Image 1 (cartoon, rainbow, N blue to C red):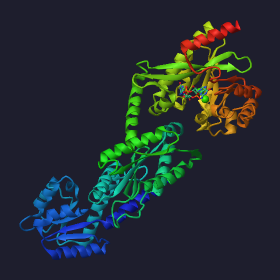
Image 2 (tube, protein in one colour; image 1 turned 135 degrees about the horizontal axis):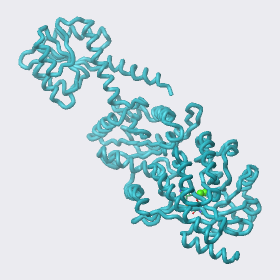
Image 3 (cartoon, protein in one colour; image 1 turned 180 degrees about the horizontal axis):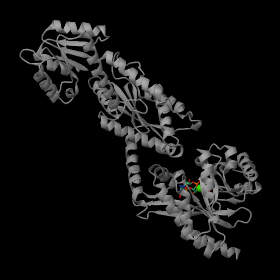
Image 4 (tube, rainbow, N blue to C red; image 1 turned 180 degrees about the vertical axis):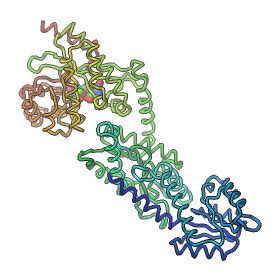
Length: 591
Ligand code: C2E
Ligand code: CA
Ligand code: CA
């Protein structure tokens, strides 16, 4: 991060803003104004509007929207006082800096002008250097005010307020003509995890770097077809935390928007190197188009949000255009999200159990607990549809604690009634792992359950522990101290660092089911399964093959000396009652 650069940028911007400021002069003596303008030209100012007609002055101010007003107080018919008091009643002009010019030096006049909201004074005849200084200071204060109200402090990008103004202005501009405009929302997928695992400072630095890339990709891009000298340019805004917006004021075809977003996806996915750490982000985009989707600014915003949500939920999709079908789907998702908040207390979750089977003997050695949600309206919701939502909101921590408690309670019963050495596997989310008291919580739950910790296997996905590997070595060692076993889940799908794999205190390696799927006939050699199996053997880990559906696959697994399998060949996940029956039938066969 280079904060110094940012400060220079801001100050630099306001310096040039100051010289470009629109200065309005109102005085019944044209000659007075001539003199003032000559002085100011000498100081580098050039943007003037002047009027000696005090009657029409107010309307002219309203129309020209100056940055500062030099106002003579003593004028016939309408005085400077009158103009000043009208300005201060106006919604926006109330904040216009007004420097009053007065020949009278008496304090009563000054007091009155102050009461009416004058910003500063100048006595006539005006001293050239005093004029320049007062004007500069007033404009600098205004530029600073402008900076803090319109720009985001971290990234230097214009903020939500300026987005609103510019978006409305961009749409207004189109009302008479029949052009199109685009709104692109961009959001980082699960940015919370970056903050939680690397800390806020690194999180801020990532956002800063991201904002630079966004600006390069989307910012200040004069596009063909845009009218010259138009003040609404294509630009990037930071709306909040990890959410950004791009206003594309002129779009001739919607493909233009695709051509903007597609290259950005690749560019933004490149690594962010912060303080020696490499961080990867996934950015999703939601797009709405004026006037096709709506001609109302707020609706366009909602539509882009809907599209964004869809892009976030579909792991294979990075950007989505708004459509009406999406709207319907989004409403359902919202219901699911809000339902998630009360699901735990309403006891809508339950567990299913999938047997873990000894490859050589065919005996059930344990089970993996898989959470399910019985939604009152949408029926059975699979974890694929709510776990990531619950991770994002943090609810997965409580849900995960419930899963662990319930799985241990049930597994203890099976140990007592069917298989004395029964082992239970429970999935753990990264959100749980980064909780500072996770080990303590796990320990408490185990202690309260009376379940032997060495028969509990906690499953952590490969991606989850490799991201921020250094910290996780420590975390996992701590977790191991409770006596539990640790499994690395979905192995082979992520980017593993083999040197870390050796450092983690892992007991078991679960080969992702996608690799077994490639084994269709006895002739398929399954080179990846073979490679992973030999790696697991060499590291002294026990191996589990996931997704074994056919006898061919089981034969392959056996040949590779993989000890345990899971899959439809033995059984799909079952509710506790059915699983109990399955255990009993095996038990009887064995006995
Ligand atoms: P996972 O841990 O890889 O779980 C295995 C998934 O593969 C399960 O899907 C299971 O039903 C499915 N499966 C098992 N055998 C076969 C097979 O032979 N063929 C095929 N095609 N699929 C098979 P499920 O239950 O839908 O779970 C999906 C994922 O949700 C899990 O993947 C796990 O990552 C996550 N999950 C499930 N329960 C929990 C939980 O309690 N906490 C957390 N954090 N995540 C969970
Ligand atoms: Ca698992
Ligand atoms: Ca798995």
